[in-house]
Each structure stands twice: as C-alpha cells, then as structure tokens.
Amino acid sequence: MISWFDIVAIQEVNDDLEGLRGTESFLPSENNLIFTDKGGNNERSCFVYDGSIKNQLELVAEIAIPPKDHKWIKIDGFTQTFTGFDRNPFLCSFQWRDEFILLITVHSFFGSTSKSDIERRALEAFVIGRFADLRRNSVNAFSKNIIAMGDFNIPKVEPGDEVYKVLIKRGLHLPEHSTKVYSNITNDKMYD
Image (cartoon, rainbow, N blue to C red; front, side, top):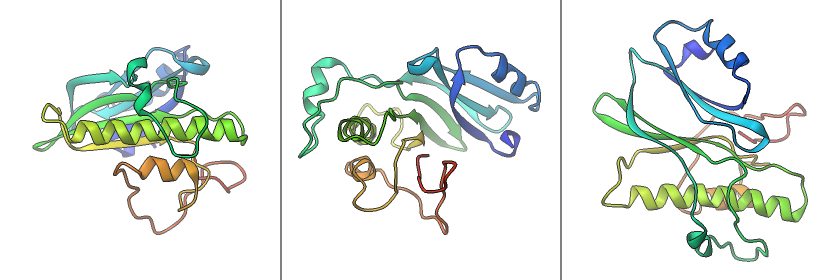
C-alpha cells in the first residue's frame, strides 16, 4: 500500500528498525526513508517518499518549543500548562513541481479520557496549529505550504471536540471528506 503514494508519513515506528527495514525491502528501489530517533514510548516517526517524483529538501526538524515560549501556549478554561511534547512532531520539506511543502507528522499524547489527559492532548494540538500559523506568517518562512498529519488522537473531528477545536483555532483545517474515517478498532474515534 505504501508504494501507491508519493509520500507517506508513518508514526509508531519501533526504536528497533527491523520492522521498518523489512517493510523497506518490499518497496520499489526509488522509495527513500527519512526518520527520527526514538522519542516517547521508544517510537520514531518516518516519511517514505518516491524519490523519482518528490525531491526531499534541506529543512528537516523535530518541532520542540523552548521553555521560554511555553507562556504563550494558553487555552481559555484549561488549568494545565504546556510542558512539551510526549513525542516531538517531525517536519520534513519536499518539492513538488515549483512548490516547496512542509509536512509535519504528529503522534500526540493519548493517555486516557480524563480531563487532564484531554487538556494535555489539546495543548499539543494547539501548539501544532500555532507553529504552522507562526511559520506561514513569517517573512523567513521556508515555505507557507504546511500540512500537518498523523495521529492527533482527536476523539471527534467536529465542532465541540476540545482537541479538534484548538487544532483549527490558528487556521489549520481538515480537507472536506465525503465519509467519516474512523481509526480505532471500535470505529468511533477519528484519531488520525
């Protein structure tokens, strides 16, 4: 399935690269990988891309917010403060035709359905939206074309869901879909 797409983002790649290398052995030779070191839960993030179609560019980063900027991460009505990501989002730049594109793959904190865990998850989502908004509005932006994707652990992609509401607060939006896409076993959550 990975070979059907020009670029694929993968979360929850094991620190042990045996599974990723096994998957890579089935892909066409023009497919390339770029991945992070391990983060929370000993997981890596990865991009697989067709090098014959897409040029991977110079900008590669894990998004981390310095403690001095945590004071700007606030959500009305939340008691919890942002203390950093459980797994830093992974950013990689690509060129498609004449466009530079920044792709961010995310695997947000999950925890439980407790208020404090939902707030932590929402704070991480807000930071992604804030990061994208600040970068696209910066005169020094590498590209204004920013796509955030991955496992945001959003219970419902609809108005009223705390995580979804703060993710889109700074201008990110979900492309229109003709169907609801659930990504958990019981088919009632839209995490990804």
